[in-house]
Length: 630
Image (cartoon, rainbow, N blue to C red):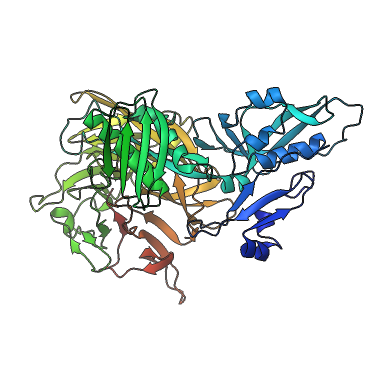
């Protein structure tokens, strides 16, 4: 990338340029630049899927003028040795008050407008760093993508000191980086918090079960990453997620030491935390284990927590009922498809499958009205079915005792024959609640079905838009919403929180705190939870072909997964079920349109994404849908 002053960024472009061979051979290089020398080192670890450059800070050159100082300062804040060298570009008073941890502005490119240089008579100067703001990281390390075109500028004031050297005297708190430097300097880290209790739920089975929920943040990639992750966990959840989660760490808890020994055991020493009470200690240790284990890429087997008054340990198998994704369902991730005759079939990767038990496993040729969309509960014991005309919704047990469809749990007055009207997008959370979108144009709504009763769910923050589809996470407190403005073809993606209140006799629920995800997408065809913190999206950007995107709940897009072309795909389905972080990820399922070369009509076929390749799946009869539970 280049600044508007035509100065080449000494970062990844420099590393992969003409000196790449020398860098690989020697491991580091010194690169001349108008802002001084910046030393970079190529990361050769297998854990780094993307090319990463380790950046070493360089102090300001003697006699450097404001423009050169500002270039050097912008380089120094990206360095992997902390901010001590960056402070050398500041006056003594500015260095004492500047807070680099106040947040990070991410610009598409950082530009310093070309202007007249200072003269020997000048004692003060001002410069701006400007660019398109694409994202930001707040003081609590939470990432937020910015939608639209947003011009941003930051002012820097310089003074000439008594020794004749120029230094930055005034600057905004936080740091500024371009996208390339941000990806090189920061990485996403998952902290884990317990889901808050639902006061309206009857405490039985999975309905009242608390589970750990991922709360992603962005931390410096190579500046004491383990300790930074633990401190970010102890500091508490993000502002967005805080209404629906709880933490076991009391206010004022401090982090004294974090380390990992040769036996892959993590050791955490806390201050001002009551580790003497066994249950409280284990709850803290469990949060710490999953947070630290994520940093170790699954290589950490156990965590030992010590505090002023005691110690305890945590491992992956200690509390399987509260681990991330515990409500996602069977770790075998059963796959389902609807045959051409309407029967619902359960299958896997080695057999064509067997019809489910009960009436939904029978051919639906005599069913009136015929059935359309299906969704199977996370436990595999219940299924939702929507009539093909979108007027009715049934919730049917998958058991031999279910010999008839029974009465519908929902009915919509939507007009028949309109594919954009009526019920759609059935989805189950891991607590047994069914969620459905009613696209009735006269009275659109989102509905939650709990037992035999239904509840209309207000959706806060979608001014002028209506919900077209949604997908609830297994934990039941986060939801992906696809919305559209009437009269527009653009379908946008949002993440929201599900907040329960009331009592078991009079429950209330709402979707709130919506924030836009992947604002560059101009259409969203299908969504599915692929991890407990990540959504699989079938969509497209303007003037581009349709692709698969993995999008985190903070709205950031994964750069570690190769984008897979999915131009002919109509729907996709993934599974949150893991059981263990080392378990192989279940394949993505899809329904796709296959064009015939002999002029015959296109066919709709089922596919699995295996080793990043779409493979047609041999199923009994011509399937109408192909999906996982949820």
